Structure formats: structure tokens, C-alpha cells
Image 1 (cartoon, rainbow, N blue to C red):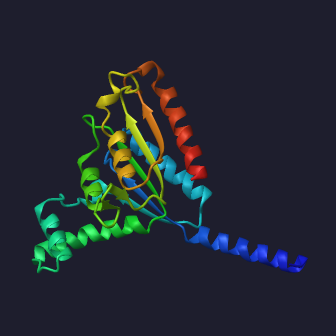
Image 2 (spheres, helix red, strand yellow):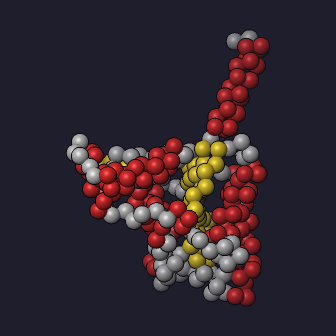
Length: 230
């Protein structure tokens, strides 16, 4: 290949890379209805979104505030509707509505190339709306499938960041098993095939009041760094 062809080919390749970057879809999911002035995970979310937008002005971004959405619980109506539809059975109007809601958020998640979750630890686990949302997403044949060797994740190509905040320090051997927020979310992601999500946790800011400001500031600096390279 001649010099002109090489240069032209490289330029075309760079153009395609730029186009792909422009078309990138990012989904931000927040599960905390408390204001950033009062809630560290809300502050982490706002900090990440701001830093990411600054570094990626052409990215297509969707933000979900799970508390504001007031999603219906994932229960019998949605489960029965989904099963009946998969079997070609007739479903009720109520079931159809529930299934359509699940499909809306599931498809949105599947279409996103990058996803960010931000949430606090409340009473050892995540806020209820996030559990509902994750239940919508965890669908056989979509985010995972059953095989003879056990379940297999189907969305391992997604880049995911998990932002978590907890007022106490759960890093000790005694406390670690009680942390069922970040652990819960990362376990579910792993089940879907997302084995290594990037995780940023701010913890101990309530337990160590003399170091609270330092803990939060250092954590937010880390959030900015992760957002800039995400």
C-alpha cells in the first residue's frame, strides 16, 4: 500500500472511531432521592455525570432517577405476563402493561454500551427501587441464559461503573459480610457476565467524623478520575 493509501486509510479509520465515539450510549442510574448536600452517593452521582459530560460532550446520555420513576414492584403480574408471552399464551391487559414496562427498561439497558449505578447502603443493602429495577433487567434470554453447565451471562461486553456510599466502615473482617449493597450489585452484574465493573466506594464518613471531609473529598476526586477515563 502506498503512502497516500496508508494515510487515507488511517484517516478513514480515525473518522470511523470518531463516529463510534459520537454514537456511544451511556446510561446513568441513580437510586437515592436525597439531595447531594445530604447524601454522599447523590453527590458521587452528580460529580460523575458532570465530569463525564465534560470529557465526552458528544455522548448520548440517558439519566434514570429510580425514585422519581416510581416503578411498580416486580411481582406476579409481570412474572406471569412474561411467562405467558414466552409460551404464546394470551395475557391480560394488566399483564401486558407490566411486561411493557419491564421491556422498556430492559431494552434501554441492553442498548447502552456503558452503564453507571449510584446508590447508598441503607440498612445493609440497596434502596428498594434499585432492587425493582434490577429485577426488570435480570431476564433469562436477555441478560443471562441457562445452560447445562449453569447460568451464563450475556452482557459481558458492557462497561460498568458502580458508585457506592456507606457511612460506616465495612472493610473489616467482621463488617464485610454485612455489606449487601455493592456486593449485591456486583454479584448480579457478574451473573450477567459483567465480571469486572469499576467500583468507587466512599465509606466511614459518619463513623470517623474527624476525617469525614477528607474521606469524602478523596472519594470524589477518585470519582472524577474514573469518570474522565470511562
